[in-house]
Image (tube, rainbow, N blue to C red; front, side, top):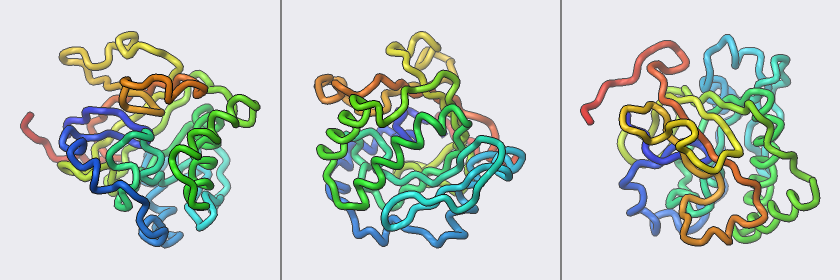
Length: 237
């Protein structure tokens, strides 16, 4: 699995750019919802049992995310939907996306409040521009926390669905940083296992659209196994 472009919940394969009209509007809410126990299991599968077994589990309800299980190790596992992708992602409204992830305590304190705000507004019927404006206002008014150093997330679920192209998935871990240059971590260099991409918007053509949002650069490293210890199928590049 060659992972190419980082988004909030995973990666976009190159062919996804051609699908920009396919998901131009939100699907009926029911298509994004899951049966509660199935969602708990999927959320836990993002990380090895030694981590997710004692994690807090969030599930999506009709008003936003709800706490289904209260954990004790600081990790938070959840299944993000497509609207946690970059705002200009061509699969922003893809109802098939199920981005299972387990965030460590530092990432949970920084990223989960963003996810909760974005999701509440989506479930209330707000448009992308309104969500972006609300995020900017929340950061300006200190209603959302600053990004903490050391935030990371496991995305190793065999059952996740991250994008339409190829195998739809790939096991990896992500790191949330305030860096502005992916070269600082060697991302994208020949032979490097590190990938990187912006959190808010994929395109750099209009940097003004991200003005007012704190810089977040997401790094990702592919890993050799799913959370259950099995290896994904090998593919020729």
